[in-house]
Image (spheres, helix red, strand yellow):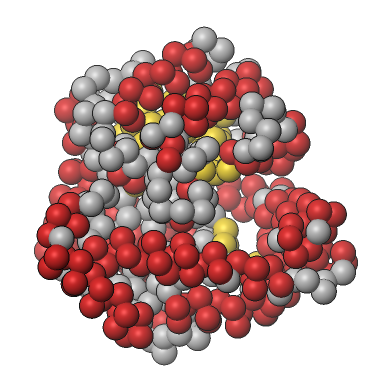
Length: 419
């Protein structure tokens, strides 16, 4: 965007996007469902520049302060989630590293920078009673396993020297799904899993609510929460939720989405059984899985729709991708060849990914996706300031669509359970 729009327009667009993304109407709506805590994800780049490390950008607090204040007015607690860390804390797209290499774990300076930034954040928010705590790393992936708990030991001491009161919400390793090398618990800390069910995605089997499927959901949850059960500490499900079918893609979208609402309800019933607090992923998006999403007829969606169709066809996005015989015919044989000549490829971390998934991440979602980034930015090249503002307004609550089936289920499980 900076390359295509120039500095003034790029900064204007992102500032307006952040402003409209969460306003008072959003907080009011969220609270009306009986929900009393929201996880706020942010990128370290809002606060620090890679070319100017350890120099705090005070502007990073502008919208975070605003949203925390809005939430407090409606008695909503906030958990601060550093969703992307210097160097990339995992090999997936959402660590925003531009690669499939989690360099955070191999370079102490990246880790030190993250600790430094959390010290700045803790200093800024240590006296705020509406912050429920800090989520220092989203979905870490440490291939050696022992570096993550060691990092938690370090960052806990540094944060506690500044802020001894706020809870630390600590994700498990390998996308918050496992606890190898975790051998003790930290004080005033809760431990977090992310409990996505493959049945909630286009490539998974469809959820019919069979006893076998329900049992599988519960077994998966208990496996992920094994550390918390062993040490009798608080477990928190920091992310879960299906993606939803687009009627423009699936003629039976309504039927598929009802199955996914049923899946969500089945998961919430399990969390109720084990008294696990949870945070849905996510509040707002462009129509993939948000509680609220941009109108398909909004300026933003109409502008990017042809590009979205291209991304779906080429599987440039992993999240919620649809089957593609075209891509499988290219990646599949290569993955098979690699597994044949190098059987150890199947042990490549994260081992929850097979060789084809590793290839798709490296080739389609990294190399290919980066090649199309300028094309995406070019969609807004000729927009005036007024048009950029109008595009950003697509994310304003009063212009968005509510996913009523999702919100109804969450409200039913939230109301009457407030702490």
